[in-house]
Amino acid sequence: MIDRNAMIKVINKFNGIVGYDVPELGVNRTFYPKESKNISYNELERLSYLPGGESILKDYLEITDENAILELFNIKTEPEYHYSENDVKTLLLSGSLDQFLDCLDFAPPVILDMIKDMAVNLPLNDMAKREAIKNKMGFDVTKAIEIKNTKYDGEDENHTENENSKHSGRRATPIKSEEAPAAPSGRRYKPVTKE
Image (cartoon, rainbow, N blue to C red; front, side, top):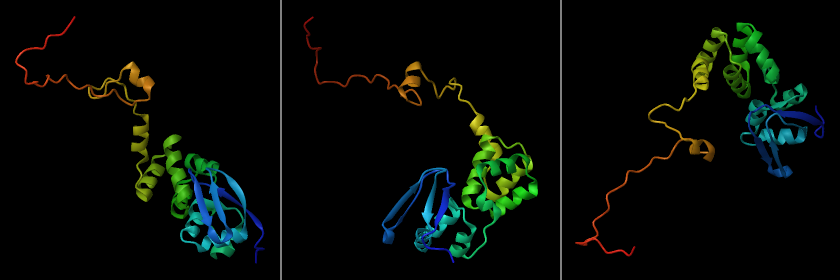
């Protein structure tokens, strides 16, 4: 049994902000990407009882204490739950195909997202691993790399840029309306103007 006041290191593995409220403790907590905090076991336990709390703890945050995980969820975690960015990079670049397939089967969603991002950004050159990602997650790494590497050359007839649009923050030059003919004013003669 873990002491309810024991402090446990928790890490945000999600590539975004993760936050939660535990109203009965008056806790409103925010984790920024890769941020770690020491959280009491009591707070983690209360969070696990709230709607979505268990998913936050299992799928987006990493509880570093195995005993706390066992107490909270009555499960032993798979090794992939504790994978770091370096572990994922090693797996993509030099891990065996079987290790990679196991990771795809047992990793939490946050690690799967990390695999997709890294596969495109490295890029992943192992075609068998690319195919495994496509089969498991429906994500086409090859297509994503092609899209990432496609450069807009500015010469397409439908997308012309000028120097002003490059500096104004605009993505494209605004459409220029053609001069519309002046609407008839009902006059028979052109009004006289002073010069």
